[in-house]
Length: 248
Length: 322
Image 1 (tube, rainbow over the protein chains, first blue to last red):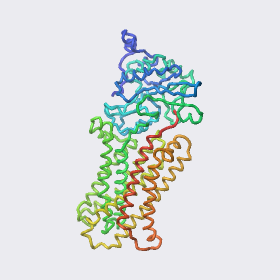
Image 2 (cartoon, rainbow over the protein chains, first blue to last red; image 1 turned 60 degrees about the horizontal axis):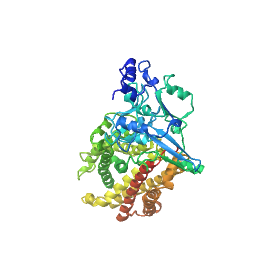
Image 3 (cartoon, rainbow over the protein chains, first blue to last red; image 1 turned 45 degrees about the vertical axis):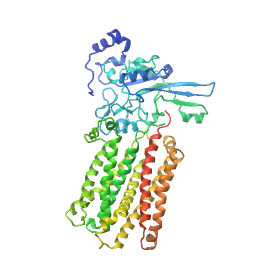
């Protein structure tokens, strides 16, 4: 995998995003992404507005399709949190993916330098030709975002659809989200939607106490888990839709 | 159900790696203790057993690790060689190089003992002494690293304790001693049959030294276990929740009965029965062979149970909250 930035000019990118009818139908250009040539260093981030998430799992499926992810494992998935005692009940959704942490513990433990955080855009990537599948990074990730891909035998996870983002396209999950709950873009561009949303909303990240400084932010995320049930006396059930896996 | 990414191969590796590294370090230090390796006698025998145990145990453990690799399971059989293409600060990278070095040095060290006629002053004498000086730090480093490997992960609160590496080191040394004593008790006649000149008292002295060292090591192990749980139990949050899996959860019986009772307390009590009369009243040291084998078996079983419980407990617990 080369780390070379895209060789496409801005015009090419725009052409690609606005050119054919098929492309218009299947992809969306993102303001922060399309400025490939004006700024060399990017800091990609995602804001997930859970108020707009209806739990349709379209992002999960789009991701599965985009990467041909084998059965039983997911790069992106949606958790649902059911809570409350009848009639005061609520079901919230928590879309999950790799947090592309600023301080990625998974990168520091890799013994073969197969995974690294890209300096040019902050995306944490895995080179599946180098990875030996030792699973140390899986143990190191506080978010359970990594898994062994049964086909390649190497560690795998969300990479913000690097191959699409390089071409100025939105990640597959962002592109497919019906409620526009996922907002993706470059934080180094103050005019990008993600920058504006981030500065005008109160956001949280998952497990901030781990000190990983995630680049995936949530608006109105439900941080309830089963342990809160005991304290509040509420019924709480968390479903992850990942086979044989509790929320890790 | 939580996913167990590291299963029996990793548990067995931590066990055999620790046992082999411990046996190697103990063997070399016993050899050096006997006049820097110049004196023949039971010390040399003990050193020999340790030297012969170390490489097969560590190679077996390391070999098992390869089976656990995702790349190996997917058919990339030699992808693990990538480990030796780079070196970085990952505990696994440092550990791989350390293991490689230990295996080479311990093989050379075992080679100097390999001939049945090996004795101080033979043609391998100088090489053996030099390698012994390397074996002590290398063995300790390998034993320590297995704990650092697990301890380096903040995402695994059960493992993320500075004292876990210490626990693994002490356990490695004590299982190493037990393996040497067991091997000598089981096969000792084979080796010393041609060596009738050795005084029995000297042999007993060395057996006494090893057994009392083992007693001391297990005593330390009990203390380290106590510290591990005291600090974890007095914390709040992820670590406290994680240790509950052992203090009152699915792994409680296996830990307290399998490791603490069978692997620590029972051997300590038996060893004290035979060591204390000599230690306190300078009585003649006698340890029935059957009892010695039982104690060694228990210590080795305890070492395995420790690795088993720790590896599983670390993976079924995690950060609390989301």
